[in-house]
Length: 117
Image (cartoon, rainbow, N blue to C red; front, side, top):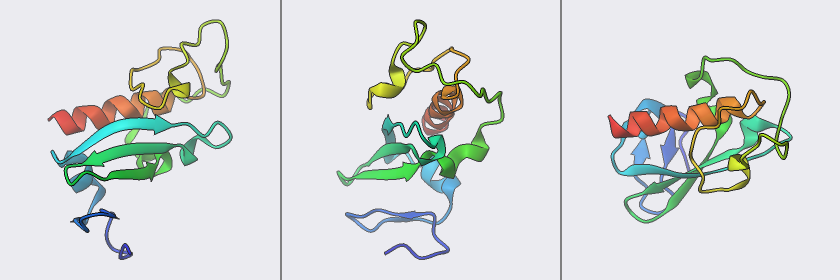
């Protein structure tokens, strides 16, 4: 079980990240997917693989403050300009629609850049 003062503990190997910054920068972590929650975007789930072989799930709201760009009110999922990225768990590309989901797609890119640096 995670201690309140730790950011995340691996459910398999019990490795512990004390801070979110440690987790995001860890080369043993890779972002592999996103499961949208269209009712409450902050409750969507980012999926990360750890080198021990387990997949860790963390809600998008945990990283929300890492995004400072525009937030749109209208969701355009399924519309004529929607590429459906949010519907595909393993799709991590940015979406350029001015859609309610855009901040999550941008946040994915931020997390990926931090892992690459």
